Amino acid sequence: MRKPLIAGNWKMNLNHLEAIATVQKLAFALNDKDHDRADIAVLPPYTDLRSVQTLVDGDKLRILYGAQDLSAHDAGAYTGEISGAMLARLGCTFVAVGHSERRQYHREDDEIVNAKVLAAYRHSLTPILCVGEGLQVRQSGGHVAHSLAQLEGALRKVTAEQAASIVLAYEPVWAIGTGEVATPQDAQEVCGALRARLAELYDGEVAAGVRILYGGSVKSDNIAGIMAEPDVDGALVGGASLDAAEFARICRFGETAG
Ligand SMILES: O=C[C@H](O)COP(=O)(O)O
Image 1 (cartoon, rainbow, N blue to C red):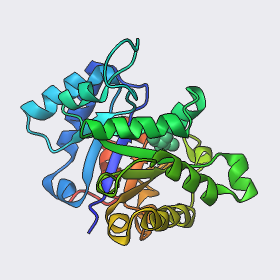
Image 2: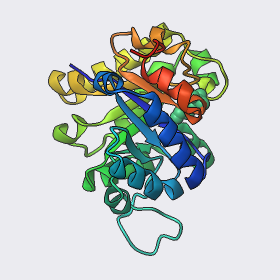
Image 3: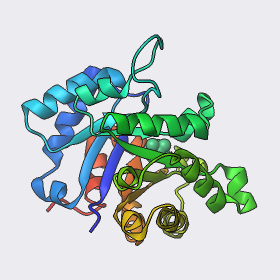
Image 4: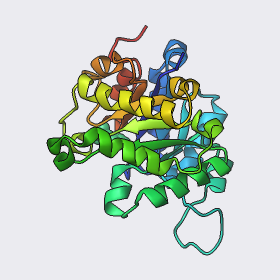
């Protein structure tokens, strides 16, 4: 059985003081039942990670955390880069790789994304590999092929053992930050195709165990429909994860606290 994962990608928002306040509010809003039902994670900016680590460790919180990116390199003269080793040392569980904003604004192609996936594994971090098509590709009907090509490009030299622990996130670019959420059927179509391709690339057992998230304008009033789809195992939430109360509602799939 796949345990759902709800991950909040804060993007370039919230300084370390705001991060502390947000995680405290989130911890207060969540109960053990919520954590039993879904893994709950935040992906703050690098500069917040130490503060989040201190809070999570000190208060023994069940909130997981990770980074939004990492270097493809492990150490050395790479000004401005952050290595997987540094993130692992800060207790990160996850690292997002290949987010469409990295692909778009930092020209990250499949080769770089693949190198970053491999770097994450070298440091025992779980990659949250993001794939998804832009509006033009969607309108031309090429969205499934596009997402599958990104998946295959990112998984070169990734072993079955490594692939078994990956998290995938299908994020149609036209739905990110636009309020234009994909329908549950749109999400299922691509998430189902991603799982089927994992079975071809590896085997059925690997494919059946991998968590596949949907991302793009997820809110507490649309999460339930998305979660009802058989191949959708959670959400990668952007804007709505900055509000701890709203993110907590998303973490319980839009239901009221139990
Ligand atoms: O990583 C998160 C996605 O980019 C979704 O962002 P959003 O929820 O603000 O649309």
